[in-house]
Length: 401
Image (cartoon, rainbow, N blue to C red; front, side, top):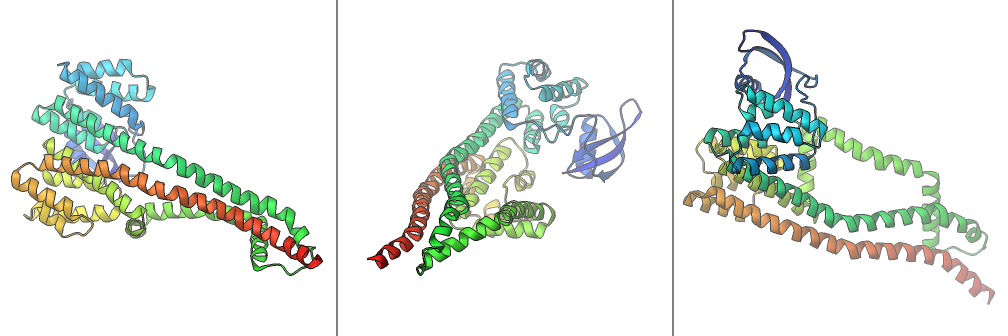
């Protein structure tokens, strides 16, 4: 999505200039048309969106709370405009209150809700805007908000489960790293003069430990610099070099243990998002296009782009998916059954449910294996250091006897 600096004519015939985020010029033209404006000209700019608070970013929990309230109010028969006004007045988040105030005032002029929401691309994700548009056009907005609520709750639940599973291993790994640094930069240097003054041949393990300690003590800043520079360098290359980003994501899918997990997460996002979009009445090609930006992996995103192209040329979704090895056979078979039965949305949700159950099990299994490995590593490190210190002393005592 890019920022466009545009000129447009409103319903009163006045010319306006502003900046708005859009996928392309056609998307920009559609957004302005929904807002009652006619596009004159536009060009891509690096300037931030102004005037409509388009640069505001809101936490996902706030959006989930908004969708939950809209779901309850719309099912109770409360008009959309009244619901927006009520939520704007009762919002405890000042930034989001500003956004909702702008949204309801725009809706009050006759602009559809999805068009008003699209003014804030960093607040309302494109998938949310498209689902609201589908709900408005099909007259099923209450049901759409119910589905959106389930989707956002699923997203938060997935994040929470992964985060919860990572807390203990991350804590233990951090403690091991701190202990390693403490021993090799503080404890062992205290023993180095004593061991070197014993006048006995030092075992290889002792020489290696002392050499590592001296290196870390003198070049600790280099290690710290590497730990900082490498992640930043990878991030910069991923954001500025498309080829590197693609190669990195391909490599991440092949990493033992964590690669299959990342693949499951990406496929879970695809099936869940595509199922929600299809159920809401979004056209298949548009749904595939939206899902490409939601899977979180360049390899699978590129595969979905080719799937979209094949489907546009007349292929079935299952046959298009079958051309790419990143999609497992169980997913392809389920999609094929859903297409044949005319229940693709239900089939996709069944597949998503399978992944939702499998991912927490896989995460717990991975970290369940890592915990004893970390413990063994801790014991091994302490044991090696202890042996390297006591072996020379034992050799000295044996020589004295």
